[in-house]
Image (cartoon, rainbow, N blue to C red):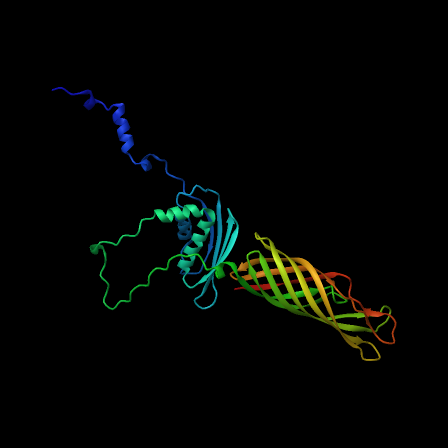
Length: 335
C-alpha cells in the first residue's frame, strides 16, 4: 500500500489553511479589563458597586479610549420614595449631574450611560448597534405563570436624565453673618437665602440682620446703638469644581442702618438706607447627600456714607467706611 507524503506530514500549505479558518478571537491575546475607580454610596435596595462598574465597562465595549476613569456616585433619599443621585466624574473629563427618581436600578443605569457617553460616545453607539436583539425563549424554557399571581412590571429602560434634572439645581441656605463694612464694630447676625445653579452659573437672593453694634462720640459717653437689615442679590461664576466648589461672585446689597441714641439727653433715632456693591468668593463642599457646607467672603463698598450725629453735641457718632468686609458660614440644602 502506498502512502503519500500529504498523509504522512502536514505541509506549509495545510498549516496556512488551518490558520485561516481559526477565528481571529482564538489567536488574539485577551484584552486587559478596563479600570474604573468608582466610589459608590447608596441605600439598601440599590445595585452594588460592581454591577454599576460592569455596566460602564459593557457600554464602552471595545473603546480605544483608555484614560483612567474616576467616578463618584452618591444616592440618597430625598423624601418619601423619591431618590436623588449625585454623579461626579473626576476623570477623564470632569463633570457633574443630578438624577431624581424612585427606581435606584434605573437611575444607576442612567448614571453608567452618562459616564460612558462622556468618555467615548462613538464606542457606546457602536456597541449598542452591535448588540443583537433579544430573542424570545423557546416555549419549553418558559415557566407557566401561576394563576392569580401579579404580573411583574416591565424593566425600566436606562435613559439619560431630563434636561431639567441635569442642568438646574435649587438650594436653600442658612448662615451666620459677620459684618464689618456697614456697622461701627464687627457685628454678628443671621442670613438666610436661596438660589439656583445651572452649569457654571449660580444666582442667590438673601435677607439678613445684624442685631446690635454700638459706637460713641470720641471722648464722650454719648453714642448710639446700631441695627443693620439688608437684602442681597449675588451672581456667581464657578472657577473650580474639585475638590471644592469655588465661585467668584458680584453682589448688590440694600441696607437699612438704624441708630438709637445712648447716654444722650434727648431721644435720638435715625434710619439711613445705604446701597452697596461688592466682589468676593463663595466656597462649598457636599458632606452628606444634598447637604453642603458653604462659606463666603466679600469686599463691600457703600455708594453713600451718611454721618450719624447727635444734635447739640460736637462730633459724629458714626460714618460707614469707604470699604469693608462681609462674611458668612452655614449649611445649604440642594434640591
